[in-house]
Length: 204
Image (tube, rainbow, N blue to C red; front, side, top):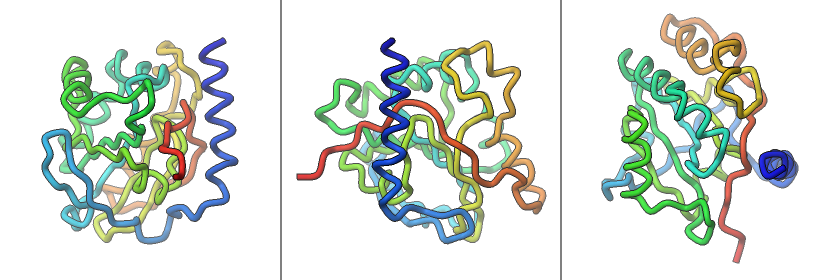
């Protein structure tokens, strides 16, 4: 029941954020500046000339746990970074949320699951998440070397929290990167994201 409630909340979030301007595939990806879990400043524009994956994350979400506890997200990260792709995991969970983990604890959670992102970034104000129209955890994006957004959507094709579904699903990020890295257009450039609603900070 709790999982169903989270899913319903995520669906409602699609409507709530739908009215806001959001990043669009085929358009320039919004630049941003955030601090990583070590306090270092990271800018998207620093990685111009490389493919970049953006992953919205929240360890409190069962859909995120599915992909990390199974090893699927870490394996996808390693596959990407091994090919020279930059992987930025972004947490837009507000500090007041019960799901919020302070930077050191968030990094420890990732390391326990052998995660391999280039950096884990903190977006507690939700500014970056909202600029991309990120709605769920996980919600995935690919930015090409020219700074254009070339993919937005789900990690894969089966919207469930069941680890057993991973091997039957199409990993959209892996497929999209394989196409992009060989200079091909991404065949499924926009897909439906699924997961828990992002726990954004409420407007003042």
